[in-house]
Amino acid sequence: MEKRKENDIFGGEELCPELCFRLYEKSRGFKSAIDLYDTVNTNENFYIGKQWEGVEANGLPTPVFNFLKKDVMFTVASITSDNIKIQVSPLAAAADSENLKEPARILTEELERIGEENGLSALLRLFARDAAVRGDGCIYTYWDPETETGQDAKGSIKSETVENTRVHFGNPNDPRVEAQPYIIIEKRRPADEVRREALKRGSPDWEDIAPDEDGAPVDGGRRTDDKVTVLTIFYRGENGGISCYECTQRAEVRKPWELGIRLYPIVWLPWDRVQDSCHGQAMITGLIPNQIFVNKLWAMAMLSLMTTAYPRVIFDRTRVARWSNRIGAAIAVNGGDINTVAKNMDPAVISPDVSRFIGEAISMTNSNLGVTAAATGEVRPDNTSAIVALQRAAATPNEMTKQNLYKCVKDLARIYLEFIAEFYGKRFVDIETPPDIAESIRNGIKDGFLPDDTEIPTEISREFDFGVFKSLPVSMKIDVGASSYYSEIAGIQTLDNLLAKGKIDVRQYLERIPDGYIPDRRGLISEIERAEERIE
Image (cartoon, rainbow, N blue to C red; front, side, top):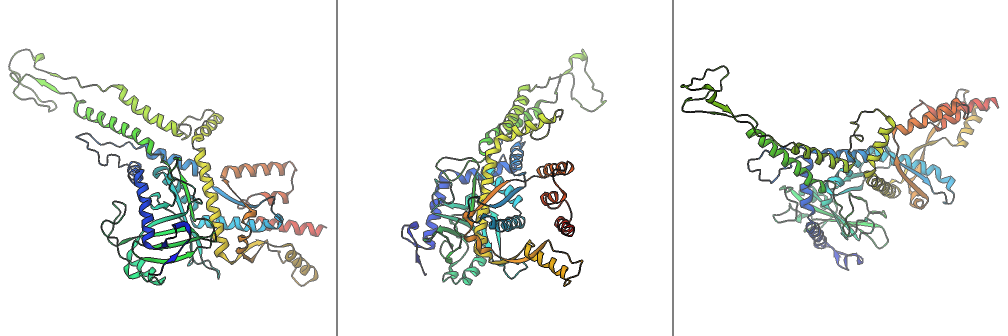
């Protein structure tokens, strides 16, 4: 097997499958020491409703009133409900910032296209859901060179979520991604598929790739006979760029290669920070005792109702041989006072404190999480301003998590920028018609070389070299924030008022209104420009 000496990251050892699996097992030992695997399994069960898993019921009913799922879904929806917008602009202090506006606009549109292609909104919801339930969310980004783009240049950027139990940091005491000496991602893939890929990559060990044997370090309950554990290790090379190596437990899948980017292709979101640990604490972890309390109270209340709620009859057997519960049936009595033949036992009465404590437990849990009646819209809207104020106050507990999510989106945008600068090359993009081309068309019309009804196109397709961003990242500012429908409506109303009061003209109005509200907005602007030129 061909081996290669790496830098001091691995203590001078040769990068090989044995070393990678030793580092992998070391990380698994840390996760086991903090009970991550058991915690994640328990949290997932409680989230999906398997809340009596492994519990001896001893004849008790096993009801599930899963308010945890509602709390998690509401919290995740509240921090991801806004349409997150990524805006790129030149830094004010950057040299020649005026000429950077067009590249910044092209990059903004390309980031928006990548987000649409990867379903960024749904991806972020799953990302936040993993953080709330499992403790950490992770988005892994890679380059797919085979994607068709409709141009000569192929390839696109892909992003997917990865479970925190399959991500292994070189320094498990530090949650910062870029501070890691190396990062390992664990995957379970069909052995035949991995063997073919290793052969294609020229690996001398491709015949040694086989499904995992019994005793291999695989998460419980996830074993299948035809799968093999593949490790992908990312590390920072001597030149500062990110390098990568892929292997199984006993075989090399792909030799070390440079990714061509300077950032780890991973975004990491711990839900609640835990000191000296790369793993955070999940939102559900601290709420499980509340859920167990509610379920047990309901179980005991149900058992009491099932056994004592219905009245029972006590009768004198010396006077009534057999009691009948048939409706309208006659019962024969052997002498004596019929009022002393039988009587109903009074059913047991459940303390009203049971239902009160159940309601209080759920209500206080929801209140601490910001899932109040005002936040969910369950209050009567007598006073609109008060309702809005209450909803904003209820969202305050999740504000820090939302800002952390925005930071993760900004980190993801910077990773996208690294891939764009390295792999995109030259591609055709739509840009606004440059003034020199528009002037040439006008001169052609004036001189009779072009028909009088020739229209000046609002946009033209031109080749753009995305490699220019390799030298521009220090001059670019990436802003991430909410771009909601209501904020656009408010902006349009303001523009309408300015136009109605004569503070702006029609051209200024059209230049500032968002795309999609007026058909062929740029065409209208061009017609106004031509009309102004004819008047002049």
